[in-house]
Length: 289
Length: 329
Image (cartoon, rainbow over all chains, first blue to last red; front, side, top):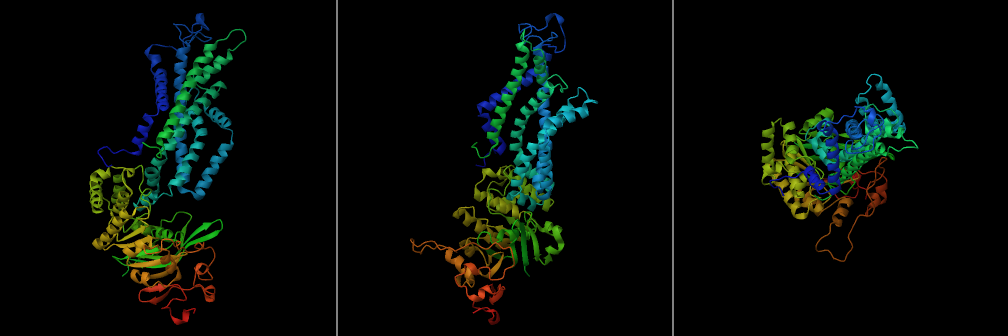
């Protein structure tokens, strides 16, 4: 019972996760993709921008594993470097949405009543606004001054993704604030801020982490869609797909241009979904350790 | 002098159907070293009353009336600050479900230390030592290891002991116990009750023990306050209450307790109907609709809580010791 090794809810969750094959494979695929994108290009000297007019539209061969594009650039290098943007945008925008959503939902749920009504009506209103419209608006606001900067993308995508997070956290906190350990914390003399941060927040971290892993793929897709529309700011998987589509013609098919970035995108999204599923099961305290 | 004096306490919850009066004119006292039982069926306002005593009512509930005095100091006059000053320090509280009253994500030590750090201004190591001492006092061995444990590693009985240690950490003079043994099995329940008795003797602790279990109350309490529809309907020393209940509600509650020498084939006795949900002002005796002894006079006025013997009060117009003028029969 109370032995040398004290096992908390977190280590229970970890031991459950370790036994979930799909989640483990997901985590490994993610790790491999991330390592390839961030380390490999520098390691083996790949150049994503060097053009070579002589070797335009080459299909995959030993020299250029994924072939070359219409300017003779190496597609393998471009997919890896583009992956950096996609992964960064996915993580950073998710972080933005987690911070805003948790804070917003936490405060609304904890204070309940009128505060909750007011804050959640704002969320409802933002839900009603078409998110693409919001994203484009935010991107346009920032694009003059910071062209090529990823920060506006993080913000724009994070700002449209926090709504569901806020609703999830608000619901959890609303239930948790009625629990007796919150009364016990007030008996201990803890202030509201401490109760919310120290006593309630750890209890909502499970659902937050799980929803965050599901947010990452949707942000990556959103960013790809933006790039596809021509609103992207940097080389990313979405932009590569857009380029591939722009050279589609009835005479010759450059299939590798479309297939290679799409495969990376799909593998990453699938891995994230598996990991998210595994985390959801692992973090549910009702499941056995 | 009394440790706790509650006078005409009322708690209201605004609902869609109107204002629900969960507690409606409850008065009671607890002397130092006295264990007072507060009994009544679910929904009669026991817990709301206890939470109101510490200004811990869940929104939108609030105290609408009444005076609460601790050690002669009027808390209700001092407002939120006065309550914050005694909450958890002068007055400790333990709850019904030890599964939910400890935070599952925090180690026991963190939760205990918080109390000592806030209320006693102890430093981390001193707070830990004090927590250990209290854990050992409530009968938990290997206190150092317990501090590092998470609540789910402990049994229900151990958790309730931890809660008691937590409530006693700041050396309170009064302990509010809201059905502390309801979620425990009988043997553990007996141990916890013995612990409360010991602590009372040792520290002169006043205890307000909320329960719906008359068996527990009979064995533990000195005095009993029977609550119905948000207020006291009978107050009596424990032996007298069980020997000669005056209010028909008390009588009915006692009749509901199954006994070993009952005919095993007889149906369980219960009180017909539900406690009233109080919205408007009472115009008749609140128990009259469920009362087996009701007479015409019961419907004409809401009876007052009057003395019916030494140390005894009740709210029935037919009770024996009631002054002639207010008797209905």
